[in-house]
Length: 537
Image (tube, rainbow, N blue to C red; front, side):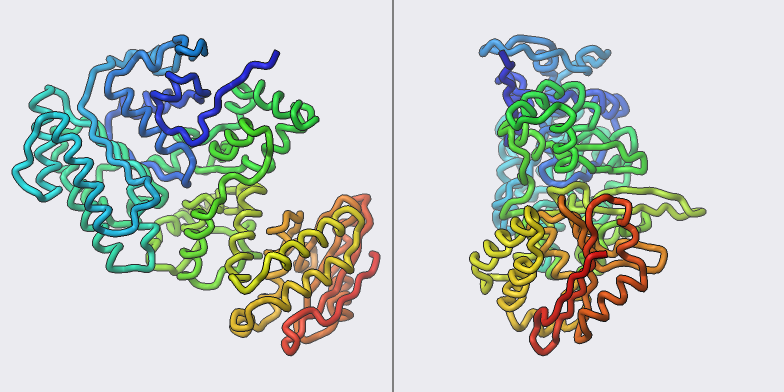
């Protein structure tokens, strides 16, 4: 009989996970290292990557709740194993903990932000019987830290979750961003000056704190976001998946008629691929992976309406994005510190938001250079789908999308390229005129075709290199490989001639599947495909 494991989908409370018998991947070895050193820390990770659970676990440690970390059996009869930190020399003393949680997505006005700060400070003032002498948040924070130290004899622990959530959702509103920064500087500015009363501080967010200018006075914060020893502090590593969660993979495999190795490979393609430093330890998206283990269905979980809206909002304020160039793009280490609100380069935003990740590292003299790419199939497809919806807008009916999906399935199963091209033509014909008018060039149509293919789940590669150049698009199908070249106000014959001249198809001659050369011409007058030809290589 299979063991029924409880998966903490949407649960970020460490206490509840342990007491209610949910599965927990032990990260307390990282926690022990941090709290033993005792310096203030900052960690940047994408959304839904376990930062809130990490904060909750730290809170339980500093509240001295050793019983949650020891081995025990829950009221429901579930055995919870002993965690690493319970085997160490940690003293389990009780410290006063001030936890600020800004992860709520419904904060949209400065008044709501002020209300949350006031409520949080007021909660701790009431808990410890402290009557504030002033309304100013700065003075209230200083008063709390000093009096708590005096009352308990212990210095204060400050935990700040998703400090930048409000600001990231306010990008584009310069006045609101400035006001929010002032609030955060006012509340957390005292942390360095009150170091005598501070035992430990831990701040999480998506963007690096240096980008937001909020903690400029806290130059003693240690940024562990790209340090190898903390790379796996959030998320689920390959080692953790294949050891602790091996029985779970086997159960999912049985439900899907797959072997352990086959199911692991599918999970890896969809959710693995995150790297947060030059060491590049394989890390899985915990939100998506846990959802897949619970539902026993490998599909898209990370992207939702909020994710798509925030991404489109950010990209709409930045220079046009060349989506075909994202795979394998290189970026110097200094670029990670570009301010978000400058809107000069989307790459740091895409990296820290989790849409791109580190896929390579090399040092050139004094320059550290990173290669970025989509982490996995889930993010690659979700990202393209966001861009597709952004381009299509409300003018595009669901019938066009459905027709495109159906045509792609027929193409996938039977190699019906002609019907698929007709569905693509119908899509272009329905695009808003204003959007196309502002993007009249060959690359626009090439990039749009690539985005469409990725968004519907095709295995497509852009700018594949050969000895003589780079092919526009290569679509990999079970029954064949399609090497595509696009032209603009030229001819399909010219596109085919370029495929031959540059040897684009020769690269796949030994694959074993038939290779088809596809030449496509887009017309500026028709705003669509006007000619295409397909020839067997």
